Length: 79
Image: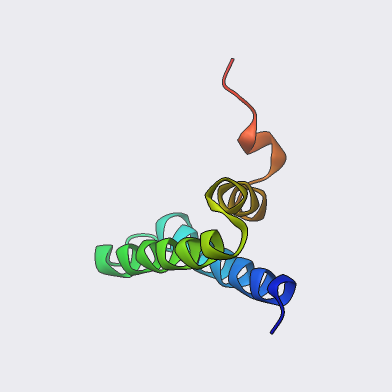
């Protein structure tokens, strides 16, 4: 794979892990999702972040992840 497709694949995996953990906390599975399930999703995101940082650098990796999992309004500074 080339660098761009590697980055796209990693971001897709991060988004899937984030959505799964979010549903575990807020969605229909609320109260059913176990702590270790959410912890595993968080650990997976961390591993994907490390892979992404190797490809694009740490600062760019954080920016890409933020843009992937959060809406622009979530990223605005608190007032």
